[in-house]
Every structure is written in structure tokens, then in C-alpha cells.
Image (cartoon, rainbow, N blue to C red; front, side, top):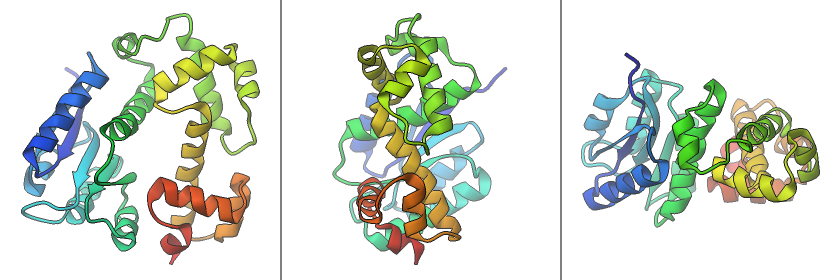
Length: 247
């Protein structure tokens, strides 16, 4: 029998962790992964496996640092995405988290909606790759006649986000009009089309900068941004400038 996927919340503040758990269960709906809340690093590592779909990890834990937990997670299950949350974040801590393999980094106080959307985007991307869980999309209230076209739009963006694509291009490829595309694309991914494109570009930029083979200027040109605007977008997305990350 296929094991149920799980989302793991590692937060030592019990009330906040349980609140996030309830919110995720509500937002993801029927057929979504099981949401588990633990309050220590040791408990978190007991739950890590290839069935873990995403980890929301606080930096400050009672028994070990979140960065230490992150390191162990990546040793055991390298493909598991980890979102770091902290109230005491510095650029140095952010840098260390990314170098250890964190997918994203959010400073407290944060909007629960923002975090839920990041988790939903990771969750839904998985199902769009492997053939969809129809119950999830029923929960999202996407009309069945729109869904195939919407997935075509998403696939087109996933394959062409490095190109100067426009909303008109996406409409033409998917067969959706602008109103339907804009309305339901955000329902599916948690982002507008342009926001989703920027997110993919920033993730690609992050990988290029980590690899260290290209200059920041070269990376920005590849993405179609000026170096100054690229730096602003990158810091807004990850909380650190690309120059700091590259050092």
C-alpha cells in the first residue's frame, strides 16, 4: 500500500505550530499530505523519510539548532524541500541555510498566508509532475474543462521561464483567455503568472550562484534583468543579496 505523504512542521512554540498545522489542513483540503507538528530537532529527524513532502523548520529549537537539523535532513533525504523560519535571522544565517540546502527562508513575524502559499506551490508542483490528484483540484475549485489548459500553461512556463514570455504567449499556448488564466493560475500555484515566472527565475539564479561558475552580472543578463534590479528581486525573494551569497 502506498504510504501517505507528510508535511512536517518543526516549531518549538506549540501554539504557533498547532495553529499552522490547522491552517495547512484547512487550505490543502481532502487528499492532501498528513500534517505533523513536532517541537524538537530529535523528533523531526525521527519523522524524516522520502515520504516527507516538505519541512517547515524553525531555527531556534530546544535541543539543537535548526541548521544542524537541516544538515541531517539533507544527509538522509536530499530531495526533501526545507523552508526555514526564524525570528532572529541575519544575512549570515540566511547564507548558511541556503548553502546547507534550504529551499526558502522566511523571517518572523510572517504572514501565514505567505507560508501556506509556498507550501501549496511545492505540493501542487509535485502532483502536476506525476499525473494529478483529482481530489486536490476539486478542493481548489478549478473547473474540469479549465484544468488541462491550466496545466498546459504551467508546463509551458516551467519549460520556457528563461525566455521573455508574456501573458499573451501563455494564453495562446494554453487556449485560455486572460481572465481565466489569471484567476485560476493563482488558485493552482499560489502565484500570479508573472510572480510564478519570477519565482522560477530566482530559484534558477540561486542554483547558478551556488555553483559559482558565473558572475552575478552574467546571471542577471541570462535572466533578462539589469544587475541592480536582479539584486533587488533576489534580496526580496531570499532575504540576502546575491553578492553576499556568492562570497
